[in-house]
Image 1 (cartoon, helix red, strand yellow):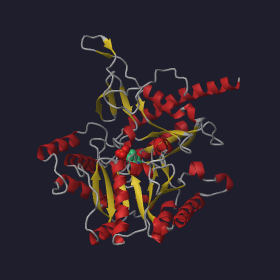
Image 2 (image 1 turned 135 degrees about the vertical axis):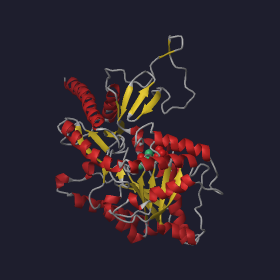
Image 3 (image 1 turned 180 degrees about the horizontal axis):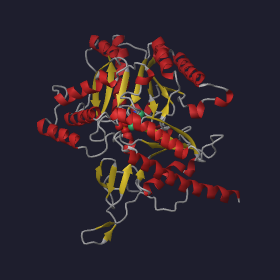
Image 4 (image 1 turned 180 degrees about the vertical axis):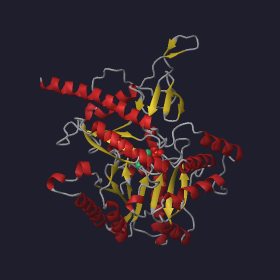
Length: 487
Ligand SMILES: *Cc1c(COP(=O)(O)O)cnc(C)c1O
């Protein structure tokens, strides 16, 4: 880790007790992510701002993990949620349904969300988290083959990509390529999973050898086909990938032609295509579905983070007519279920979030503000010594840090460059989302920006300006340590 000049640990500072004396907070009963550091306590959140219990005001430039798409404290969402609580707070989905769940499904699947073609998705299944949604996708896909084979199928292998993330439950973690999050569990994850290369041009397109974007895309698609053939296509359930990769590598879009190629290869062998849009979907990249501009029709899509905008825990699996028809003709059921699936309050809140997005045309706004953010970032960081790549789409942008721009050599893993920038930015009043292991799960780092779709021009300017200052402070410190090292 870099030597820090500011106090950058996460332990909440001493708080004032009622008598006005300073005292340390009591030991937490909550199992935090880290046992040695206590996260900041947030006492209030409104719009794009978080108010900490120590009196600080933080501009939330990442919405947690790209979650708070309409900002905090929206009155319409709060009203819809409390109204639902007064109406029906819970029913079991085995026997009952509610209008909030029905309406949310209709809203998410609405053709309005994919104006340029019929996406072919006909059913929505609501759960409490992205990981659950992806587990549901894995089970649904497997059941598709099971029903199609009247109870017999050789299809049991899931194919996904290195450098992608699909969640932390055993199923979703098994298809994830995020090395750090899997490490202690490597011997307990599913073994029927195969991985192919990420679609990550900045790192892996061999531009110096004359490889064009089209050639790179073609090469990746060929690799997927070769992997299907190696496994035996009759053994493969589904190919899963993030349409635009989020936390693991930082806002990485696939090269032009990649998705069409993947769709064709999946179709050639009848393999299902699952797009994980838990982070990049619900408008984040400037269209409701990140797959729309790619012009492909996935068989299963999962949504999460932005769906409830952070107001409630909710995620969705969306299923195409092709799969539903097979289930209908088979057992006529989806052999899966959760106590809290399609929870009425969660659905009511998420429905209100969808309504706000539509009424305030927030996806168009996200698209426009995204263009602006891209211009600002390129202007401020284009010449920065340690910023190797500036990439993104919609309000979903990342800066990848490197020690050497020409060779793209990352900083060594222990340096924590990205974390240092994030901590420094926080000290200066903005929250950004850091990521490490960008290159191969170990080396490389980036930070991710994902402000709310209704972010103002002024806030956007402030985010970039403050981030630049934070970056410069870390750059100066690192340059100093490189010189020290050489002496
Ligand atoms: C966050 C995320 C998940 C997991 O969602 P949880 O709600 O944390 O379980 C899955 N896939 C992607 C792409 C994500 O970003």
